[in-house]
Length: 480
Image 1 (cartoon, rainbow, N blue to C red):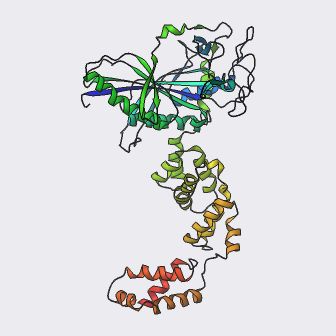
Image 2 (image 1 turned 45 degrees about the horizontal axis):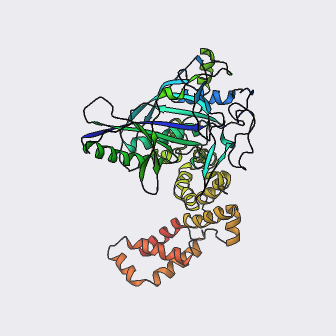
Image 3 (image 1 turned 30 degrees about the vertical axis):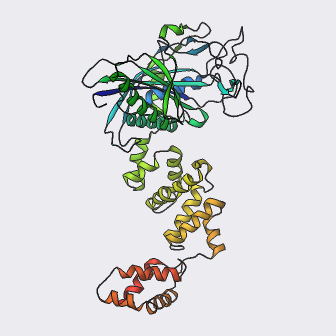
């Protein structure tokens, strides 16, 4: 397969977070009984007139500016005709030749899904256009059902240039795009709810050639992992066919995640099959240069900027900032707590090592975390002022995560205050030394590592409550 090179482009659909749908006043939210959030407009009844959602248009402009796009002063909506049960009007209001945003780019770097370093890569953005979403089909044993609650939800499509050369680059691009949308508050990008979906286009060409091969599209991938796996499969499948002398045709394929392979859905439609024409019910949308500049001056802070600010403002490491800023909700949680503690670095360690682990084990998002940033900061303060040890703090934190109780309450209820009385600790040190004569001799024979053994013994005797620093000091005094 080394003689072939993959040429990959992505079409990412992002549902925009608005109160109402794109062209009507029906609520834009997930869940609920099927077909309960519909009206004559989103169902395409005769004689109704659509009214554009200004917030959805504004958010599309923000997305374009955040990805370095040129914003059109003049744009319009078009009708894209096709016949499928999930589209009640038999056409979709979309954009064709005059989208809101064009000619942008996204910079990616670091490691891909497989752990390989992808280096620094620039992926071009062809266009970002705004359209309405379709309904949701559910297939049962002998029939199919359609829910139109989602039909008409504002949907942004981000189309990349064919600049991606590997599944790892595609995975990194998707993650970066998701970060931008979440940080800007444009979308929650919850893929389980269909708020972010991806189609991938992939072709193969001989290494060193410029001409693209036959494009194969894989539709409706609902996870980044599925996008990565489907690309890996196609990058293996297509050269196998080419080397066997077969001719590939432009087609649309689906992805079977259980079997780990793509399957033919239909031969790909050509652009003219959709019969695009300007929507006669909608006026063009215009923006002045001054209006576009006003959007630019109010852009939200993106991960890279927050990453740099956290390092300088809170004195945490580059690694800490990278992990924390992967999710805006985690970053905001940390920032709120970091302003309340003496040493934000300690809080960063706890967020990364304990909080994210607990959330992962519970399969929960940080929005579901019972511990508030203020409670977290108060627990860190107990460690900083030596009320509890780091070891005890882990026990306290686990209880906080389960019950949402304050750290101070848990410490009092369980009697976990750190022992800092010199006399009490000294008696424990004496007991540990008296009970371990062989280790005392090892220490005297010049083995300093034995000191940690004694620290462990004293902490065990104190049930983890002795001040570790005082324990070390007293052990050195006694043993030396």
